[in-house]
Length: 135
Ligand SMILES: CC(C)(COP(=O)(O)OP(=O)(O)OC[C@H]1O[C@@H](n2cnc3c(N)ncnc32)[C@H](O)[C@@H]1OP(=O)(O)O)[C@@H](O)C(=O)NCCC(=O)NCCS
Image (cartoon, rainbow, N blue to C red; front, side, top):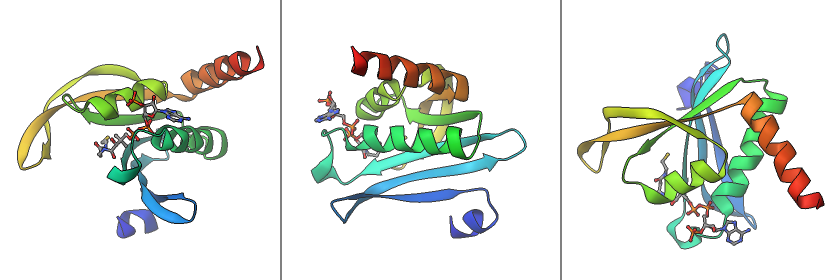
C-alpha cells in the first residue's frame, strides 16, 4: 500500500474517533487519467452500527470529488456482506452488476457486487441531503 501511495495510485486513510484509531478507508487503483478509483473500508467491531463509516464515506466523497476532482469511485462488496451493502447504498452508490469469484474472503473465492458513484451522482445526492436538512 505504501509503495502504491508513493506512486500516487493509492490513498490510505485512517478513521479516528475522539483521537482513537477506529478503522481505515483506503482508495486504491487510482487512475488519474480516467479519474477513477476503488475504495475499501473497515471499522473497529466495537464501533460499528453508529454511523461512523457512513460519516467517513461522506467526508471521503467530498474530498475525492470536490478536491481531487475524480469522476468515478467503485467499491466491490461481497454479495453476502449486508452491513457493507447498506453502507454503500446509504452513501449513494449504485449497483452495476455482480463479479463472479472476484476476491478471496475468509479463504474462499466469493462473488462481489460492483457498486459505483460518480461525481454527478454525488452532487445530486449532496443537493438532496442539504434540501432535506433545510426543510
Ligand atoms: C462495512 C462496515 C464498515 C459498516 O460499518 P457500520 O458501522 O455498520 O456502518 P455505518 O457507520 O454506516 O453504520 C450503519 C448503522 O448506523 C446507523 N446510523 C447511521 N447514522 C447514525 C447516526 N448518526 N447515529 C447513530 N446511528 C447511525 C444506521 O442506521 C445503521 O444501523 P443498522 O445497520 O442497524 O441499520 C463494517 O461493518 C465493517 O467494518 N465490516 C468489516 C469490513 C468490511 O466488510 N468492509 C467492507 C468491504 S468493502
